[in-house]
Length: 282
Image (cartoon, rainbow, N blue to C red):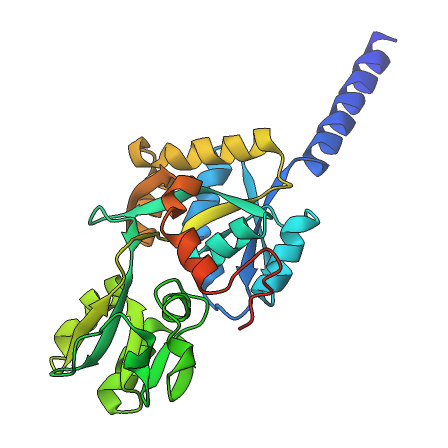
């Protein structure tokens, strides 16, 4: 009889464990479908969080508009994004910032620079500077389309072309396909050696947080705190999993990020015309 009771207790325990595992919380991170390789890029981070008993799952989203809806209805808990999208999500009141990476060179912010062929007149700060000029930039980027629209450049530009990347925008100027490129300063810093005939003719006056992990306002706060704590601990973690993340993502770790870090970005977005009803299309 004792044996039967012991077996029954073991079976009940196994069922309870199975139920617990099947209902374990999963942290769903939204990934844009048009960004191949992102899942692979963050794989070391998935392994690191798993070592902290946090299970991560990537969920595909076709557009940023759909990502906002996924935040609103609880299908996505978080997303890594540039400051333009992150700030837009904050303005729409569907997400809030949590952490951002600290790069190996100690930087965690960026700003827009305006590029043109060497010898071009310096940017005057006025929209009419872009009259009869072909301008290229990344869509929805704080250091691209958002900055350009915040200075009302679209009102006078001859043509505007959205580039798939800041690098492509720079190359468009080099090839003569565009007169001006509005790009991220960090990208220009990494490429300027290749383009001695291009120079900065203007710059944004403030900084934007880089690569922020934003959380849905619907996410369980205790669970979100656990994820945040794990990410903030990465910098001092000596485990192989932590070192792999730092090496693969080329970061020192993550630092706390709040709305205050968007003190330049949010006004920039609002000047560009982004409000709570913004649908991520200009």
